[in-house]
Amino acid sequence: MRFQSIAIDGPAGAGKSTLAKRVAGALGFLYVDTGAIYRTLGLFALRSGADPADPAAVAELLPRFSVRMDYGPDGIQHMFLGQEDVTQAIRAPEVSRASSAVSAIPEVRTYLLEMQRELARSHNVVMDGRDIGTVVLPQADVKVFLTASPEARAQRRCAELSARGMPQDYAAVLAEIVERDRRDTTRAAAPLRQAEDALLVDTTHLDLEESFHALLETVKKELEA
Image 1 (cartoon, rainbow, N blue to C red):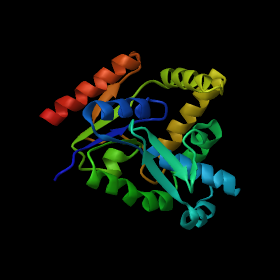
Image 2 (image 1 turned 180 degrees about the vertical axis):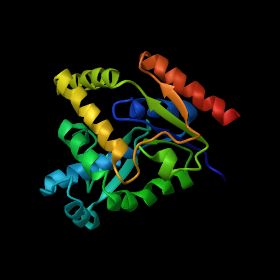
Image 3 (image 1 turned 30 degrees about the vertical axis):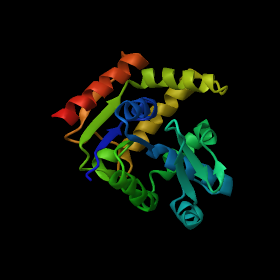
Image 4 (image 1 turned 120 degrees about the horizontal axis):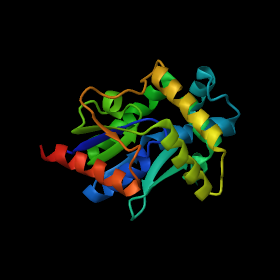
């Protein structure tokens, strides 16, 4: 049986996780949030007292890094660090910063690459991240580059954090998003970029429902082509 794969890339805060999860549900595909894997490693680095930006220190952690994905009956992805469910813990702002740092380390990306590809070999998947269409699944059936302006992404991130009881200053969140864009697009290992054959979906002026329908229709059209 040949499985189908949908790769959704884009910058931080573009709504990839939320929208990809809904698209996967609508299509009956498995949703894979690859960013959650890097977030879990970022959390592990912080808890281990290692500098997430130090390649040697993070590389030393990899043999002890026990990460696992699991899915409930509702299809929601849960992340486990060892035996601990860290699904909520990895969404903290300091973990976001740590995940950005560890994801720029070539040894980390190589170490986690096969785990991501194996999921696509054994399931129909919607996979989102920064380099899915360019590095992880270059032969994906559908590739989408999902984006929005930094200002729109900062507003959405602030709303998300407030809903979780972790309110943040808008100016600080915007500055962090701009800096993360700079790091993600200029890093040596698998920089963020739109694949040549990826379709652009810009949600700057769309609300959540409009963004979902725009993405779903784009994906459906490509799968039916």
